[in-house]
Length: 193
Length: 331
Ligand SMILES: [Zn+2]
Image (cartoon, rainbow over the protein chains, first blue to last red):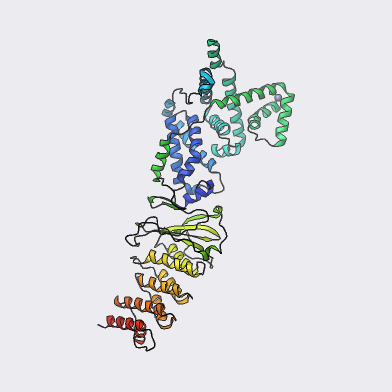
């Protein structure tokens, strides 16, 4: 089954045979999970997003057109779900505390390196959270998912020009947050030397 | 300055290598000539690099199980070249690459049969087909097909698999300019037409027609729902096929179908009267005797039986059988 294209797998699903569902899940669940997690900063909500996106993919399989990219369609469903989630006011407070996601760095890099990496991760995560949802959506899809502005425009329901502006503004904010602050890792390194 | 901000908006596109050659060139030229934008470019590049600090997360495996459970798909190990899936009505099988498959399920199957029925492709049919690209394969619901098969498309390389004998779901796969699988209820109009068509047209070669008749027999024999199209198609095979093995199978199948149509009776009478092969005539008289026992025989059939019973040069078994059938009619 893994030699079939996304479109071919979807055609099988459209015919009522769900056997390709696991293959499609394996292809895209990681990307969708990462996007939802970084967008919502909430692990539980990200899991729900993935679940709902794939269930919707099955349920509305016939709305998928063979000439579209499956990734674009799935990210559209995901982004919609995430926007809805944020719109529900009380979900804002459910943002997970600043938790470090990454596993400890391999020991050969030494404990100082590991801590530095974790601090960097935390800084990026916080900086992303400071963006507007539109900017965050655009930068996550562009920087981390490698989507083109045309695809992002389709997902966000805006023009390519608007995507360009959103990504640019996001980068401006991130630049301030990431390049001007003193890096905690450096501070720590200085302290122990 | 307006130029500067336009240039800076393009920086992320420069980083993802998404600018066309001309814009890329213009942007680089500006970065080199404008010190402020040069500094901005370096800062943007650095920011982009720092963003790498976000690790890629792996979704917990429980999420996969949750999804597959929700849609009712369980995974099973691959069996030969057919991927089979749990016995849900809508998640059952997948045909692969050049394998073309007829899948039929239904309560008709002989009680002891629990394994998928798989008829290997025959030499005669494989010679004539081109390798089928999977890119051209289609899977469709029979309910989505028109019951009218237009023209006489060449159907080749039919196979039969039953993944679930406990329901009425039936599927057919074959080559018809592309690799195609059709699935649906066995009494679905389009499915019936397709079965009938495949039987009469598939490959036009003896081994494949024999297989097609076998499939039809297994699918519709002893079913409670009469399928006159199927009976008619089998009757036409009995009348027209030049291979005696095929005609014998056709008679056998007509005998097992739940109801006899006039077309069935006429084909059997014609076979009994005119078929050059005694085995076909013996089977035909058997089938007519069975129909006689169920009280569905008309006068023309009775006349033929009488004629056969008294025909001196007829095979003795045929004469005896004809006489027995007449006795059942007038005990
Ligand atoms: Zn400039």
